[in-house]
Length: 340
Image (cartoon, rainbow, N blue to C red; front, top):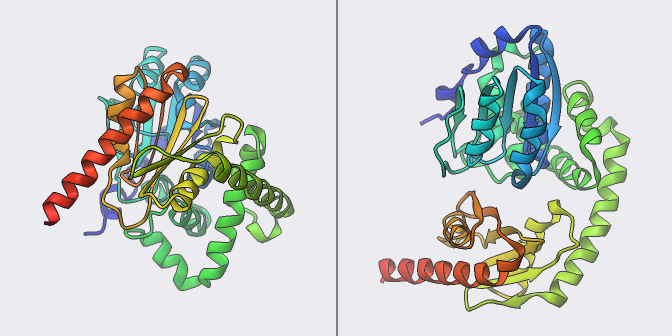
């Protein structure tokens, strides 16, 4: 079944009504968030909306929304996790109409005015197909960058179409350069890049090359330190506590410590913020494990089965790790029982 059929042009009638409206678009700080913002910005410009792009990691979604909701008529949230029930409720109480485009597991009673959701596609691809008739340029390459970097290739029609037009080395190299460059960018840098992408090839963006090079050097040092502090929680989970690491590096650290310690799951903890990754091929749902453990210590979490995140009180990180490790171990033992 082609998942794009369900969302094709689903946002078009809503966005056509936004001429002269004050619109805030908020998305994640990774390539999927950037690509979502680039596609939405292109379309909003075409329909004559007055819009501003904002970027935030999912953990800070509620805080950012509380600051921008009073200043806008419409709030569009893309790739920020479908757990922002409180933020969405608060925005609607300010009189905002709320549109959510997301691909994370739905963990709470999310009730935006418009909800475009499918866990099989990345958020940028959902934005692409939901607005395709309003595109004045071919935006497939932008959505393909997100599908690749967000590991959403299996069902990605836009990536398949893009690889028929461009050599995969071009697509994957440019996507990776963006992925690294974003680590070194602040909100204004991301905003400028999102507005440039529909008009300017990555190959002409010198700042992307320079920032990506610096970020790769930083990553090398971060992973070296991660190896020094990594520990095994139990026979299935390895973790590293690194309070000074850049937020965009935590997923990389989690994957690295899993491999280094030969564990199926890796975790990076940064000031109470959690990133977890599953080694490819393992049937473990870390989103469920994080959600369960975080809830028990007064936090929250979610994401995807192989890659998820959460926020817990810093004073209860040790307790969270113990509960998380126990839940992952239960999942592994249950999977082994089913196979035997």
